[in-house]
Image (tube, rainbow, N blue to C red):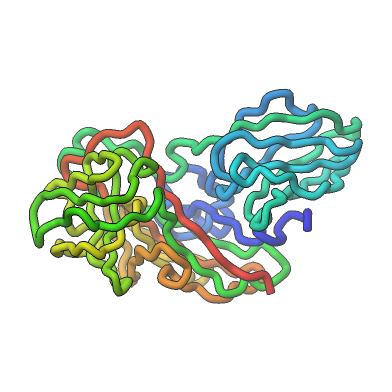
Amino acid sequence: MAELQTRADSLRIYLTGAASDGGTQADPNASLGHYRAATELEGLSDVITSPIANITVDYIAGDNGTGTGSLTASSSDELQWTPPAPNDTQGDPVEILDGESKILEGGAADGANQYIRVTRTSATALTGTASIAIDDPLNRLWDNVTSAEASAGDAEYRALMLKNESADVVGSLKVYLATLGTQAASDVAQLASSGSGTISTGDDLSDWPESGFVRITTSGATLREICYYSSRTATALTVPTAGRGLLGTSAAAGAADDTLDAVPGIRIAKEAPSSSHIQTIANESAAPTGVTFNTGIVAGTGLSIGDLNPGDMYGLWIHRAIPAGAKSAASVLDSIKFSFDSI
């Protein structure tokens, strides 16, 4: 359970843009396809208080979420991981000897996804508890949006490579977008068939981003439209004209029984490698060809990649949309989820 490249650590996500498989390429802005780079897409960032002297934290999986977790030496050769709240249940103790790297999982029902990778650097007995403050790092994949790009609108693309690093089959791999707030209904006011407007709800939007994207779905679970909203209150979203019909959708009149979801301003597509690489785009503004983009927010409507045998790879394209007149924000979260079985 604690070995590297098992369970949730079986699937690793790498930048692209290398000249050969596993080649040197560490710039996210150059992750524009071709071969898999040796550099993994960065996980969550950490600030450690009272570190355990001979333990380094190598990677923190995204499903840990932000907040403060703890790494505890439960014996001279064992460690336990407690993720941040609300999944703050301590995982099982894991033996780790000098020079070894292991994964440590949380103890909640889905604790296998809330894992970290650590390395022990000396034989000195493990002692103490380290407090680990976890945050989302900036510019893991995207550069900052310039004033000119925000004013005129912009479309940018990046490519990642998914690789099965385990000795088992990664089965039924699916990729989909995460939601960024509590689902709501457009039961008070809806958008017209075109132009700016307001979407209002009797539900609470307080945990939604201050500005961002809303995915509008009909009562029959059909995608109606994805819009950009420039501001919100606890019950209403303000949508400018330039925010209508984004990410492959068209403007359409809403209905009182529509469902609203806060989503990242991205969509994703898959590409099967040929001779261990995918296509290369000329620059970040050039769309990849021959791929179909997807905005599903559950595994069943996202990208279905299927089974990856040990060592197999698959390309993942990401399109980021910046609508004309986009409001500035200190940080914008783009979140993608994966589901698979270890066979």
